Amino acid sequence: MTHPFELSLEIELEATPEQVWDAIATGPGVDSWFMGRNEFGRSVGGDVALTMLGHTERATITAYEPGARLATRTPEAPDGRFSTFEYLIEGREGGTAVLRLVQSGMLGDDWETEFEAMKVGWPIYLETLKQYLAHFTGRTPSVTTVFRPGAGGSDAVWKVVTDSLGVTPDVGAGAAVRLPDGSAGVVYFANLPVNLGVRTGQGLYRFIYSGDDRGDVLVLGHQNFAGRDEQAAWDAWMAERFG
Image (cartoon, rainbow, N blue to C red; front, side, top):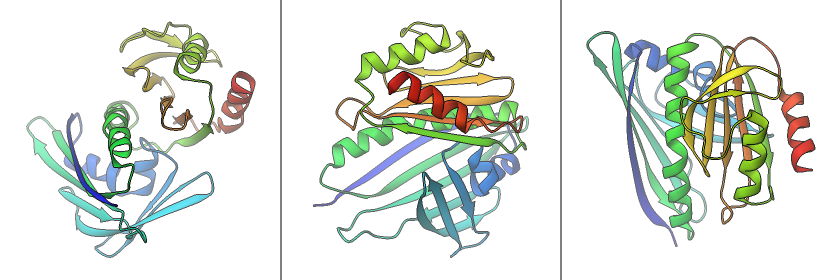
């Protein structure tokens, strides 16, 4: 049985409405803060595609007002599930903007678990968008995505991640870290045992854990803006530490 849902979030961004639009309504822009590889049409009825790990999810643009409003809708699944996304941009004084995101639609039988995953997952992506616009705007990243199901449980996962960064599991935003390749960074988002975001001088790095009851999956979602392909290095890191 399906269940209706709606999730609304808002964030203030140090960017103009035009810069925010480029970040949410173009493939290279979304690649810079979200996940996978993204493609966007440029009008109502246009196609939206998210490709990750060889799988592509599609949606259709239902509203397209550059600098102000973007809306999309996924196809309806046989059981009635679908999602709509609406992004509303409001310009503010001083060259800043507020972005409001509303995701709604119908979820499946396990709707409570799905909704909770969305609720705890979106904040790190919006904060990553904020970091991108503040530090890397207009630059196109090399994207790294690694999934590890059966990662070993929350405590074990976060001990490995935080040990690798040279911090402890009680790490908070603003803490200095060092990536396995020696790059210095700072934590820009910390919500353990769910997710952790790190910014270096060259990129944005996210460590996201699904939870023991949602597949026990560790996801790495990284963007390097210096043109360096880091996929092989992070694949090796995951294999070495999680087998």
